Amino acid sequence: MTEVDVVIVGAGFGGLYALHKMRQCGFTAHVYEAGDDVGGTWYWNRYPGCRCDIESIHYSYQFDNDLQQEWVWTERYATQPEILKYIQHVAERFDLRKDITFNARVKAATWQENDARWLVETEAGEKVRAKFCIMATGPLSVPNMPKFKGLENFTGETFHTGLWPQEGLDFTGKRVGVIGTGSSAIQSIPLIAQQASHLTVFQRTANYTIPAANRPLKPGELEAVKAQYPKLRALGKNYPTTIPVDPSGPSALAVSDEDRERVYEEWWKDKGLMFQAAFADLLFVDEANDTVSDFIRNKIHSIVEDPSIAATLAPKNPFGCKRMCVDTDYYKTFNRSNVTLVDVSDAPIDRIVPSGVLVGDTTHDVDAIIFATGYDAMTGAMAKMHIRGRDGLVLRDKWCKAPSSYLGIAVNGFPNLFTINGPGSPSALVNMVTGIEHHVDWISDCLKHLRETGSSTIEAEKPAEDIWVEHSREVGNASLRSACDSWYLGANVPGKPRVFMPYLGGFPAYAEKCATIVRNGYNGFSIS
Ligand code: N01
Image 1 (cartoon, protein in one colour):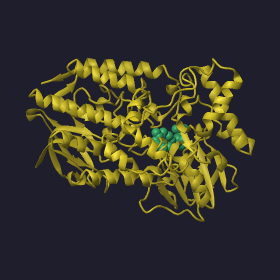
Image 2: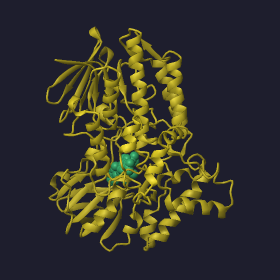
Image 3: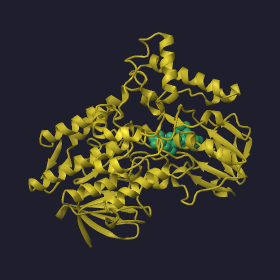
Image 4: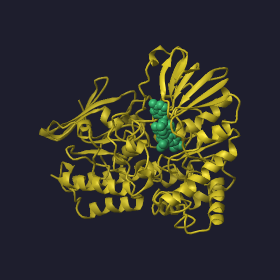
């Protein structure tokens, strides 16, 4: 049986950097990946319009200055194919593929107490033993497929945005139904509407979306960023989201109505996702939040010609409690004569029938259904595997009432197991690539520390984990982000415990906490 120092699960941004870093630190490492190539999220998500809503100059690795100097981004927001090419380039540049087994989905990981090793097994029966295991399985990687009655009798085709066919799809002349109105739907709907003969959108909860203002990068723009890249990256780490954008002021309530409106108009034009930072209190104070929610509702009414469609598209939740979306021509798409919006908030989808989707007593006939229904977020991938720690404890059982973790990096009962972007880490609330690099660097420093001190195991202690969980809960409750049902809370998956999973304290506070723990001799961890 193969034996390595570190086994890594997943070959997306997290797994690839973990592999590179482990090698650099002199550890042997091997990656197991379910897909047939690198890329993670960007390998699986190939739906039309898929791109990152963090600007391309930020959404990339910073661990190697030559890498960030040589790569050429072409647009303000990179498309999925461009990001995938970038990840493939990284794999080639650092010769990573030779230590990755593709088409290998990990089904189990078992802690072997007698010799302090993880035994990791793939679905095909391959086994590997390792001193350490890093779960780089992604917080949004397990598609959520609601169990609609009658789906098996549907005579058309079905797709999930997160499992899009590699060869792409052509909807020309077809009647298409999209279920869901989160980021994936909001990016794909305008393009599918241009191709399909008819598009029916089934909306359960209206979402806030801001114009992306995407454009090709101007001549000299990327070069100017590259000239100061290390400085820009360092600056970003002082910001809660790691994106260096300053609010126009501390409070939306401290300025006149005219000034506030002017700020929103300016930020609406080209700030994209960072629109949420227009004033520092938008996600914390109800009245401040009302001002921005009203502004966007008014925008929707000004773009969408039919007032009743505009009213359906206008969100009722507070702004930002579901993850904000960024779009190109989303609201405008509902002015097209081949697009129908079906409100399924009060009368949910009853069932799928052979010819389409039944809502109330109306059947919406479609040739294809696209499930843009999101993910079993943050815990889904790890709960799917049979991860068995100390004394037979199974991770999914430990998490069945609430996910718990120390820093979103380590879990009590699971020695030598690390999670990248696990529950309790900032994860999707920061630039994910920056968050990943921070986790991998922390883990590699930790493994070096164990090697230098002749130690063989490290495990999060229960009291430290409990304190972190409680702290994360308090920080989460202080924000309006936890004010409505969302995947942040696990509320999109029936039966999942409702706990705000990402850490909301912001990157600087989180990174400082991680560093302090190291400075204090890894307090909260037991090392033996
Ligand atoms: O998934 P979602 P997503 N009947 O969970 C609806 C990241 N991302 O794939 O809100 C009817 O947001 C559900 O309705 P409701 C980003 O972090 C990033 O779009 O639960 N509808 C909702 O409208 C994002 O937040 C980019 O009432 C049902 C939709 O399906 C995250 O991924 C691009 C339903 C799911 O929305 C997830 O986004 C894309 C049912 N039974 C995604 N069940 C970037 O640009 C669910 N829905 C970086």
